[in-house]
Amino acid sequence: MAVAASRDTEETYKKVLAENELPADVEEFDGYSVGWMGSRTARAIILYMHGGGLVDPAFDAHIRFLLNGWKVMKANSQDVSIAVLAYGLAPKTPYPVQNRQVVATIHHLLKSRPAEDIVLSGDSIGGMLTLSTLLHHQHPMPTVPALILPTPTSRFREIFVVSPGSGFITDTKSMQENLGKDFVTHDNMTKGRETLEAGKEPGIDFPNPWILSVSAEETWWKDLPVGKVTITTGGDELWRDENLTVGERIKKYHDREVRVHCGEEEVHCGPFFDMMMGVTEDKAGTKLFKQWFRDFKA
Image (cartoon, rainbow, N blue to C red; front, side, top):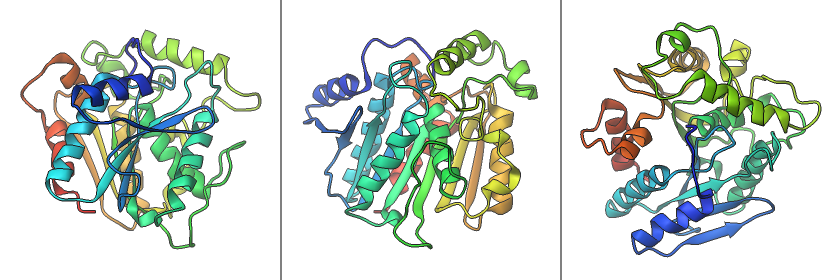
């Protein structure tokens, strides 16, 4: 998602938890932080990477939706916490430092639990960070430390990504025909991409397979270190065709369940956008995300 925001992710996290009369627990790292919903020592952890093109922080809707999901899991007596990654934003934090922060956070979580108790999730560019982290395991991203899992057969429990996307205008049909249907415009995308590109570290190609997953070689989707894969997209979003293509490639090569959902008349990051707009009737993508929280077993 790329919409103007006034607070940073950590501030928004603290604000929403305070509104819900819950204590904030911020774990500080070098240049970024993690906001916890639930105990740091919970059995299962959902590491969430928010959208915003790597230039905008999380919105109230991100934190509110995730908090609602955590409350549902807690009510179901599941020993699970959500860790919201407040990664550094461009241009202050140059790309791909954000990928390094994801890897460092995963290594931190692995100190106290197996990969099988870690879920990766995200929306928009956060979904792209999720996918790029999986690719990075077998196809290392330049300048980003290796993702080291405890054993050769270790896998993350699953991923759940919503509308993965970045600021690159591709030649897909949906990138053109959904202009005016989606709330995102090509101007929004170009502005965010230019901010990111202007401040990126030297020697980093733009685009690359880790920020534009549809450009990755098809065989890169073999041997992903994860169990179940869920990708959702909107029928009216610009990234629809890219997401469906990536989903089908993962289905072709992955040896675990892969679920790809395209919601009719849904826009980019539909669950969060509808919450921001005050939509009260859940569309199919939102229902699927909420059901995922209800069904979650730690």
